[in-house]
Length: 287
Ligand SMILES: [Zn+2]
Image 1 (cartoon, rainbow, N blue to C red):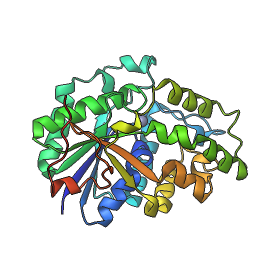
Image 2: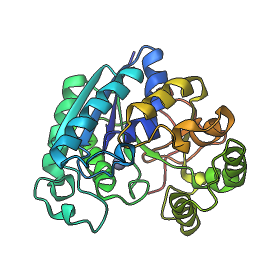
Image 3: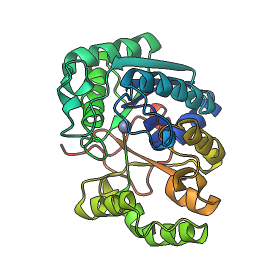
Image 4: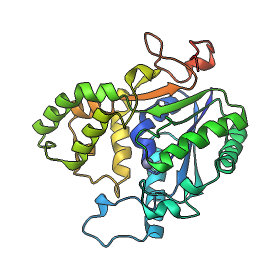
């Protein structure tokens, strides 16, 4: 059995982007380690609307508890907080906080993660694609620090979690229809409009042809949805993210996507992050 380290930016990213993959790995008997870079203290709190806004310290404590609950649901064996402050969205004054992840020295932060990789004798590590999926400073740093840490610790199997742009472009209409059927009219929703604009301009996710691994996580969706619910400060219980009917939830969250670093997608695409440990060969990327 192998050990996989999943490196993420904020509490909730693990559930949204690799939650099913972690649970499948855990169920298959692998050791699953979750490392979270920041405390999530700059996140908005739509799930706490109506009550007094928490201070950043209070929010960090709330989010740490939510993360621990989600990690339990997702079969995580060990959860490590790397201890950086949330940098906030690009352009936010929090970007300048000397203790935030965006201001961290990449080699120093990578040293911290590399120590965990070495201690765990990690067989593989996941980070994000080079744009951090959607450009958030902390997500871009997860890419840089994850890649560097793997080099430092000599972990050769690195996966970049990403979003398959073409999947969402192709299924958006159907997703909207299923959501509308369930009473969620997303046609005037600002977040939804932003998401679609980002898909169109190519600032979110990657071209689907670059995705080497499609992980079918449909058997984990009950738990994955419960993990979303565990992040109650971020995802209100009545939001479409957790309340979508099964078919729509499956369309949006039933597959998780990764790029095996240094590799091109094969045909058919790979479906298991761990198979490479048995068969290390594969088409090498030219770059
Ligand atoms: Zn995040």
